Image (tube, rainbow, N blue to C red; front, side, top):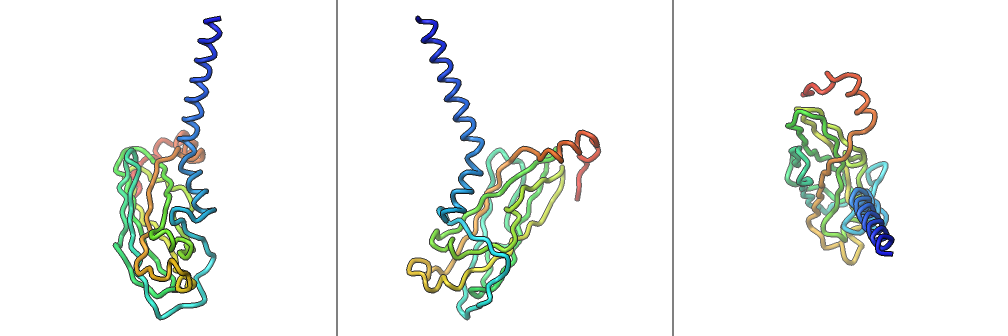
Length: 194
């Protein structure tokens, strides 16, 4: 009986460890999906084109960047803030640099503060929509085009926002299979791309 109890305990512990590992691996995409669906955490909306309405009132957009501790990239906004009219399309750039001797893939998550403004902050194009792969020594400028929906001025909670902060956090992810295959067939593909 003691052997069966030990086996049961070992199987339960293996199950718990496996479950926790799977949740850790899936936490970033699940959180991103949750925020995009609910607007929680200042998640933004996506638009196919800029607003048709541009107001005379302006708002400042600040830009912030961080990265997972284990990600070897350098990552920063190329401008600290910009002021634009509500409804006007803005274009900002972030810079990423891979100083290592190996290709690294990353995915960005994002949020907007104050949280109430997240529902009115629309991205048209963004580097965060896709995974990014930087080869050794590669430096890239990554654009994000956006606008603040004019309906923000009618929202009882968000209408008093004078600043919006757009924050990105980059996490390392596995290299995409097509990149792994290309590197396996052409080791020279690891040469720096500047």
